[in-house]
Length: 248
Ligand code: SAH
Image (tube, rainbow, N blue to C red; front, side):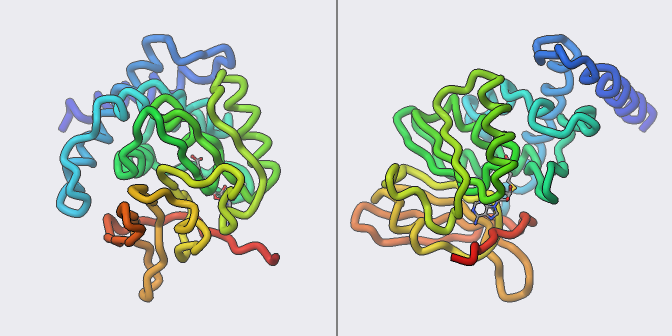
């Protein structure tokens, strides 16, 4: 118990002392320490939830992507000391950056491959897109709030991500010009947009938080087989911000 408290205190001290420095690029030992700790939490939560997800281990390349993505660059400055906690954090416009474990498990569930083109709905901070960047060929991401889309674009450019394209728009419409997609990752919860199913390649997968009749959300995996037949399976109860329907 005492050991645990000392460890937590150390983590808190390191988190408070790092990330105030704007030049902090994440290469320092202290940031690496926080990220290693975050990976441990993700690994233990993966084991704890395996009974729901069927996933006992995360792929090494996905863990590496989680380790290499500087989450503190995607959260508001005053929350940077919490960036490597395993929890969601508020970003602007009442939206949230997802919990790192959820980002990791959603990434694994779409089974990303190096040649894939992936569509994300709900760019938010740009963090999920950044995690996907090293795992696939191209990421297209749609965000309905223009200021968030612009901010995510600026963040990703500053960090030299070159295979991510963000646009402002309504995710319900998908991105027909870039379709079909190997996989689609929806990071806001609602119903399943029919146009997204249509824009998924045969053999493709979509992961999406779906509202259930009891007011909860279920992370849901949709797999389209080579004949175009859909299989739908519930993965995990989750809590995401709503997938907003635009008026048009
Ligand atoms: N993936 C983000 C977190 C997303 S939070 C990250 O890594 O930071 C969910 C986001 O979905 C919010 O930014 C919200 O504005 C956006 N959103 C909600 N409804 C949408 C819609 N219909 N189309 C596109 N984006 C939408």
